[in-house]
Every structure is written in structure tokens, then in C-alpha cells.
Amino acid sequence: MEYFLQQLINGVTLGSIYGLIAIGYTMVYGIIGMINFAHGDVFMVGAFIALIMFLALFAVGLTAVPLALLLVLLVAMMFTALYGWTVERFAYRPLRGSFRLAPLISAIGMSILLQNYIQIVQGARVKPLPPVVTGGYRLWENDSFVVQISNIQIIIVMITVALMLAFSWLVGQTRLGRDMRACEQDLKMASLVGVDTGRTISLTFVIGAALASVAGVMFLLYYGVIDFFIGFIAGVKAFTAAVLGGIGSLPGAMLGGLLIGLIETFWSAYFSSEYKDVAAFSVLILVLIFMPTGILGRPEVEKV
Amino acid sequence: MKSPLLSVRGVKTFYGNIMALGGVDLEVFEGEIVTLIGANGAGKSTLMMTICGTPQAREGQILFDGRDITRIPTHEIARARIAQSPEGRRIFPRMTVFENLQLGAAITDFEFFAQDLRRVFAMFPILEQRRDQRGGTLSGGEQQMLAIARALMSRPRLLLLDEPSLGLAPLLVQSIFNAIRELNEKEKLTIFLVEQNAHHALKLAHRGYVLVNGEITMQGTGAELLNKPEVREAYLEGTTRHQ
Image 1 (cartoon, helix red, strand yellow):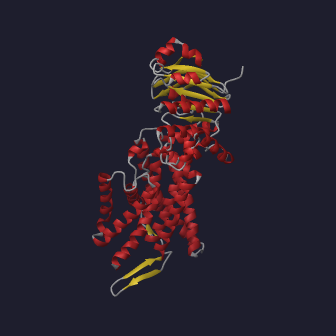
Image 2 (tube, chains in turn orange, yellow):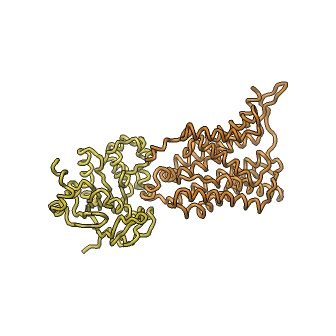
Image 3 (cartoon, chains in turn red, yellow):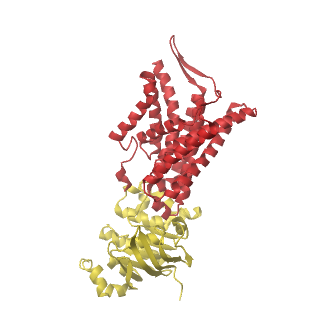
């Protein structure tokens, strides 16, 4: 029981990170019907920007953790959003209206480009960050086992919940959100009523990248090491989460992220941690076979 | 003579290498109802979409109020105050009636919104009852009214209506056509109407054009076209007999 509770806490934390990345996949798919395979690498770039920022702040002697964290989050979101915008502007937009596979291939190219770029400028070795957020709480204790929740886990879950609430509000209640949903449901009609679809698509990439960068910051704080390859595995898992929840559905991406985090954690805890990726990807295959629209996805017929 | 509000000059539109419009010329003057009739596949909807810049004309020129709009993006054309109720209605299916109308008002100042909303609800009271229902769950007639209402929310100077009678019950067709006439007579709205229901359309319109295989073959006042034997034979036989 104690062991289960501990894994639940760990799984929710990991699921939060996946969920934030998954939102970027699902939004872009919803609006232009393509899988942005470079999204995982945008997340990785976010983590590197965060690492550089942390080290720079420590170097100038700023050690107040909440302030440093806030600054890093803001800067990482800004710069990563710029990456997201650039990728869309130069790698995808020129291919709009081209055949369906073209932007997909371009996305894979951007993924490789970002990985290699970081590998060259930052080196191939793993980069450590000294622990920034330490400490935690003991929730439960008996003779053999201690259930604890660390401060960083609390921060991750809290920031994720706050961002998801803010994002749901943005999509559901604001003008930009309405424009985004209009583009998602009928791109041509959206332009006919006067929505600047190019700008709306750009902003979708910008917001998706900003959320991924927050996931990057939290990944860095949680694991303490990053390298140029983290975007691939995390990206594919978040993509799995988006498909599991129903690609195109925002609540689906959040739910899918949580589920993948939990599946992976429990699999590692009760079976074998070597095969945790197998567990996550088996879910992807099973979902694609038996539930292609995902848990909260819509059947494609409604799109007509 | 006044210069036309909309003027289409020698417009050619292609889908890939297939020519859909082969040099169309037509004009719509302020305050007019002009109709374009033609068979299925003649290029009527293509012309409507070409006016809105999606797809853009490959050759020729489209002027709106003297301004060349041939090469400007679709959302800019909408902001020039050309509104379209397109073929197939294209209601945003997973948005409420209210949100669809909000999107219709995407280009107008917010101060007009409440007033415009009252106006379209007065015109189509059923939409007020359906206000919080999703667009995709409305009946065909209700969707058609919503499509027209959404277009009106942008305070258009030119309203493009693509087959507003398609798939509707005769009684509903009559009420849609009455609404169109009222918009023109009371609010002096300029309307360009595409119809397969040639009889209704020609009776309603001041002037009409006949489109065959992407080219204009005839034009004249509504009454003139109604009485032309070629028009009667091609577009009215069968429809008049039942009415």
C-alpha cells in the first residue's frame, strides 16, 4: 500500500511533464492536421535554455530559489516560443498546401536538425545541474517504508495544474482561443469570416513551444541531468499520450499524459524498469488498433 | 453611370491544371440583388470562392469598390466587408450558435455586437432559442439561417450567398428568400446570390447571369432571363411545372 502510494506520486509527476508536452502535439494536429515531430526537440531546447539560465544566475550570485525559478521559466518560455515560431515559419508554412507528407518529412528534418545543433553547440555528454529545489515531506511512515513527496514534485504538479487551467481558459473563453478553435474546425471558413489563419497557426506553435519549455524546465529540475537526446524519448511518449487521450482533444492530452506517466511508473515499480518504454509504446500500439480515436477523441466522421 | 461595387474582369481560376472558370466578367452595383444561375459543376461556387481569394484567380482582376482585391489574402477580403454564406453552410460544428455569431463578428468593433445580435435574432428567432446549442446539432434549415446570420454579423457591404435553398423544405425556402428580399429592400444590402433554384432566384433578383462550363453565356434582368426560351429549357423546365 505504501509502495503503491509512492509510485502514484511519482507517476503523477511524470505524467504532468508528458501532459504539458502532449498539449503541443494535440493543438498542432487539431489545427493543421500534422504531427509536429520536432516538438519533442523543442522541449529539449527548452531544457537547455533553462540549464544555461540557471548556471548564469548562479554565476552572478542569484541564489533565491523562487526568484531564480520564475526568471528561468519566463526566459525559457520566451526563447523556446521563438524556436517554435521559427520552426513553423521556415519549415512548415512554405509547405502548406503541398502534399500531406511534405510537412511531416520536414518535421522529422527539423527534429534531426535541432538535435544535431544542440549536440554541436553543447556537446554530446550529459549535462548535470546541481539540485536547485530540495527537501520534501514525509506523508506516511512505517517500519519498512517511507512515503514522501518532494518539494520539486509539488512544484511540478502545481505549475502543471495552473498552466492547464490557464490554457483551458485561453482556448475556451478568449478571442484567440475562439479563433484557434475556428481554425481547427474549418480553416477555410475561419479565413472567410476574417480570422488571420496564418497568425493563429503561428500563435499555436508559440504557445505549444512555451508549454513544452515549462516541461523542459521541470524535467531538468526533476532529473538533474539532460542531454541532446531527451527530446526524442520524451517527445514520442508525449505523442503516445496525445494519441491515447484522443489526438486533437485538449483534455485528452492532459489525461493521456497522466495515464502514460502512471503506466510507465507502475510498470517500472512492479515489473521491470528496463522495459518501461516497451510498456508505454505497447499502449500506443493497442490504442491504435482497438481505439484509434483515443479516450476523448472524436470519430473522424464528424469532421465532414 | 455609377461604378460597380464588385467588378469581376476576365477571371480565370484553375484547380491544378483544370480550368474551372474561363474568363468570367460580371458586375454588381450597390443596392442590387444579382443572381448567378447554372447547372451543377458550372463553376458557381468556384466564382464565389475566387471573389474571396480562396483559390485566387490565376488571370483577370477582381475590384471591390474600386480596390483591386485579386491578390490579397482571404481574411483581408473579409475585412474589406465582403461576407459569404458558403456552399454547404460550413457552420463551425463544435461551437455554439452564439460562438458562431461571435466569429461572424470577428472583424467588427465590439460596440456593434449586441445591436447586431439583436438584429439577426429578430430576423431568425429560432437562432435565439438555439443560442447555446452546438452548430453541428442544428437542422439543415437552422444551419442555413445561422450561416446567413453569421455573415450578417460582419456588417457586410456585399453579401455572397451560395445556394441558400439547397436541401431545404419548400416552406423554408420561401422564408429564406423573403429574408433576403427584406435585407435588400429595408437595409439596402447588396447581394450576390448563387442558385440552382433558378425560378426563385430570377424572380427575386434585379439582374442575373447564366454560367455554363465556367463562362457567362447570358445576362439580363431577372424577368428577361425568366422569359428566355433557352433559360426556361435548361434551368426551369421541371421546376415550374411543380409550382
